Length: 230
Image (tube, rainbow, N blue to C red; front, side):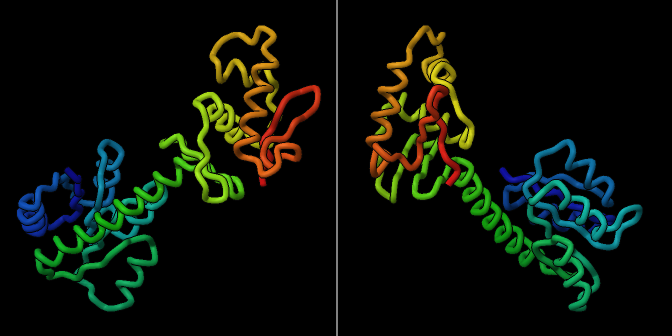
């Protein structure tokens, strides 16, 4: 259930929006000015804000700017001012949509649904990107535990994947064999150089076009391995 914050000092407008949005299954929170809106944001998860422009203490424009300092959730501005310059002012400071008063409640509901759909797609793409580590033509998906090189999937063992991921998140940094072993095997090193070397060799055979002259995993003689930031 998405949560919508209604911010308006006109109680009749609040009641009207509340009636239609509640019927659509949304959870609603209310505020009568920008300061109350910011307080609600500090204490609640909110998916969308409907924000009036003309309010006491802190108006909608100032509230919108402050919200945008920390949040990317959709904001629909409401205003009795319907001139283009007023719409441009609202949109230029970070609002996603602008609805002029008086408005049709059904149109407002449609705008709310549209903004929430767009936000969900944006968050989905953002989450997907957060799961991926891309180094040139090497793509590591940490959520799916998949690896692609030049768009071709490469099958790795769990330990090979763990080594690759460790090197990828520390790219540019030289990791010693004991650090790699303890991080991946989760036990003290105890002279296990050959174990690490064998896994690195197999990993290179799978992700490098030429394992003898590796592109991704470099050997730093006498210290360990690092992954280049290509």
